[in-house]
Length: 92
Image 1: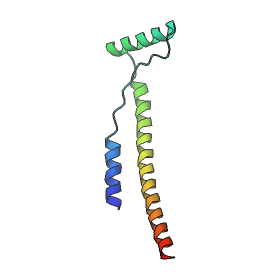
Image 2 (image 1 turned 90 degrees about the vertical axis):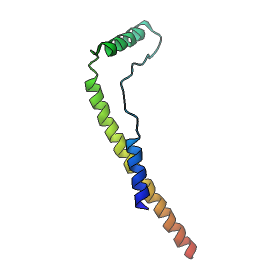
Image 3 (image 1 turned 30 degrees about the vertical axis):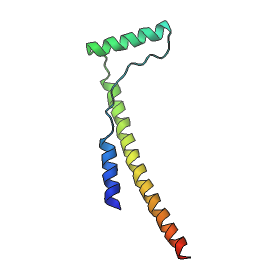
Image 4 (image 1 turned 45 degrees about the horizontal axis):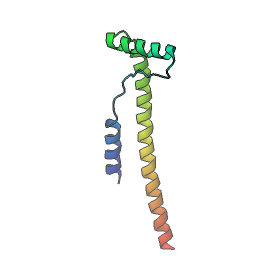
Protein backbone atom coordinates (compact mmCIF):
# COMPACT_ATOMS: atom_id res chain seq x y z
CA UNK A 1 0.00 0.00 0.00
CA UNK A 2 2.81 2.42 0.78
CA UNK A 3 4.72 2.03 -2.49
CA UNK A 4 1.88 3.10 -4.82
CA UNK A 5 1.07 6.05 -2.58
CA UNK A 6 4.71 7.11 -2.50
CA UNK A 7 4.94 6.75 -6.28
CA UNK A 8 1.84 8.90 -6.73
CA UNK A 9 3.16 11.54 -4.35
CA UNK A 10 6.54 11.70 -6.11
CA UNK A 11 4.85 11.90 -9.50
CA UNK A 12 2.56 14.72 -8.34
CA UNK A 13 5.45 16.73 -6.95
CA UNK A 14 7.48 16.50 -10.13
CA UNK A 15 4.51 16.93 -12.48
CA UNK A 16 3.79 20.47 -11.28
CA UNK A 17 4.20 23.12 -13.98
CA UNK A 18 6.92 25.65 -13.44
CA UNK A 19 5.90 29.10 -12.34
CA UNK A 20 6.64 32.10 -14.51
CA UNK A 21 5.97 35.75 -13.96
CA UNK A 22 3.05 37.06 -15.94
CA UNK A 23 1.92 40.62 -16.42
CA UNK A 24 -1.79 40.87 -15.69
CA UNK A 25 -4.07 43.66 -16.88
CA UNK A 26 -6.17 44.39 -13.81
CA UNK A 27 -8.79 46.61 -15.46
CA UNK A 28 -9.20 48.98 -18.39
CA UNK A 29 -8.13 52.17 -16.65
CA UNK A 30 -5.29 54.20 -18.14
CA UNK A 31 -3.11 53.60 -15.07
CA UNK A 32 -3.62 49.81 -15.19
CA UNK A 33 -2.87 49.72 -18.93
CA UNK A 34 0.30 51.76 -18.36
CA UNK A 35 1.48 49.38 -15.60
CA UNK A 36 0.74 46.40 -17.84
CA UNK A 37 2.65 47.89 -20.77
CA UNK A 38 5.61 48.77 -18.53
CA UNK A 39 5.63 45.25 -17.13
CA UNK A 40 5.65 43.71 -20.62
CA UNK A 41 8.42 46.07 -21.75
CA UNK A 42 10.50 45.26 -18.67
CA UNK A 43 10.12 41.54 -19.31
CA UNK A 44 11.21 41.95 -22.92
CA UNK A 45 14.22 44.07 -21.96
CA UNK A 46 15.22 41.82 -19.08
CA UNK A 47 15.10 44.74 -16.65
CA UNK A 48 12.00 43.60 -14.80
CA UNK A 49 13.88 42.76 -11.58
CA UNK A 50 11.49 39.86 -11.07
CA UNK A 51 14.13 37.61 -9.51
CA UNK A 52 13.08 38.65 -5.99
CA UNK A 53 9.46 37.92 -6.77
CA UNK A 54 10.47 34.60 -8.32
CA UNK A 55 12.37 33.62 -5.15
CA UNK A 56 9.30 34.36 -3.04
CA UNK A 57 7.21 32.44 -5.54
CA UNK A 58 9.56 29.47 -5.43
CA UNK A 59 9.27 29.41 -1.63
CA UNK A 60 5.52 29.33 -2.03
CA UNK A 61 5.81 26.59 -4.64
CA UNK A 62 7.99 24.54 -2.30
CA UNK A 63 5.47 25.02 0.49
CA UNK A 64 2.63 24.09 -1.85
CA UNK A 65 4.48 20.94 -2.94
CA UNK A 66 5.12 20.04 0.70
CA UNK A 67 1.47 20.57 1.59
CA UNK A 68 0.29 18.53 -1.39
CA UNK A 69 2.59 15.70 -0.36
CA UNK A 70 1.31 15.88 3.20
CA UNK A 71 -2.27 15.96 1.92
CA UNK A 72 -1.71 12.86 -0.22
CA UNK A 73 -0.21 11.00 2.72
CA UNK A 74 -3.08 12.01 4.99
CA UNK A 75 -5.60 10.92 2.37
CA UNK A 76 -3.85 7.55 2.15
CA UNK A 77 -4.02 7.23 5.94
CA UNK A 78 -7.71 8.11 5.83
CA UNK A 79 -8.35 5.40 3.25
CA UNK A 80 -6.54 2.88 5.45
CA UNK A 81 -8.55 3.94 8.51
CA UNK A 82 -11.80 3.62 6.55
CA UNK A 83 -10.76 0.16 5.36
CA UNK A 84 -10.00 -0.94 8.92
CA UNK A 85 -13.26 0.52 10.21
CA UNK A 86 -15.25 -1.31 7.55
CA UNK A 87 -13.39 -4.52 8.43
CA UNK A 88 -14.26 -4.04 12.10
CA UNK A 89 -17.90 -3.35 11.28
CA UNK A 90 -17.98 -6.41 9.05
CA UNK A 91 -16.84 -8.58 11.95
CA UNK A 92 -19.83 -7.54 14.08
